[in-house]
Length: 506
Ligand SMILES: *Cc1c(COP(=O)(O)O)cnc(C)c1O
Image 1 (cartoon, rainbow, N blue to C red):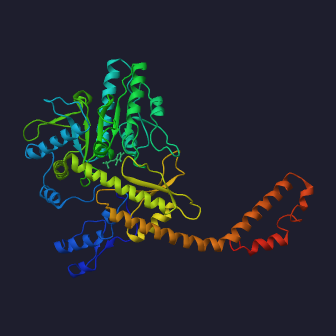
Image 2 (cartoon, rainbow, N blue to C red):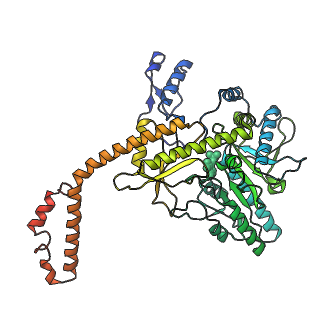
Image 3 (cartoon, rainbow, N blue to C red):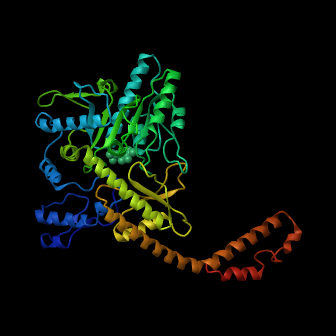
């Protein structure tokens, strides 16, 4: 949560090293009165940041944590370039346009030889989704207005996806969510199409579930929706949130039809900073045609020079992620991306097999899709995935544990995302550490169990006996008064004595 909230407690902080340069502690929430030397500032901040997790061991995130030094160099050189100064930095603007076109072609956008693609670079898929959603909402409203129909109750149909929740709330669109069920963690296209009505601005599919990596069946969704549109006369389109899958499917599942090959897919977003292999801060949204992005949403900035069309929720931002995306696209090319994605998939297989071999877990992610391994405990009666995740931290690994969304929330899983920098060696290391962790958990739970077992069993027995006794008593069955204990509970010394021997009660 980036929103800053006031915290009680220490309002000052200082650093051992910094005491060489500064004698007084720094205020935590107020700007200090005096300056401090630059090396002191560096040391203080650097020290505090040491306590952050190591990004390379952060297996929770899809976001890139390693790039080649050459690209780091380009990024550092561009760190002072404002992306919106398009007239001053025409080359940066040109590179972003090349990226848009390369990605649009990768997604099979129907672009004529003399045409350029329609799309923009964003801060990430989240901004891309807001923009795509806005375009759908505006297009739907325009059509409804033209037909003389009410246009104040737009809705969007989607599976479980936090980004659309945000869009729905910010832009006042009703969210119609297709619920998940245990064992089926993606949007069911049939259920989704059933939920579509005349107010539906679009159905949003996900290519690469955040939870299990699974690809939703966009082709089936397209076919069902084509039929429904023909039947109803509506024109409900599809958006594909390909945040992680957009840079995977084209390379290793080229025959999978999920993109602009499907006629109802009108826009697609992808995170450049996930499998586009760029550090955090870049995403893309591509529209099928010019007609799919209403003209009135485009701002023409005539800022310090030539006309530049923009569609964005931000204004100023850095240029370096765009430059880095261009670097990756031309440096790797189709074959380079393909090799990396295949390698990630192979490493995911090694990890999945290793995790299965421990015998403790059920793997809930699928073999195809985004390379990740999501797994749940076969037996969570003695400890939970949350405790296992906590225990793994000892080795430095950051593995998230979470429950599935509504209607499958009783399933708790851990998830490891395989990124380019998660090598085979690291996968093997993680398996070894997980195996050690499980042995420790068992030993620990074993001790607890030995101490608690006789007590637990007796308590349950006694509870059952007491309940049975009271039931019969309340039912007025006098004959049961002598049942089992012979005396009403509380007067029975034997039972009382037994209860008192139990460590958990007395
Ligand atoms: C990561 C992700 C997002 C959010 O993307 P950002 O690029 O981090 O803003 C949205 N949808 C899905 C399916 C994702 O995996």
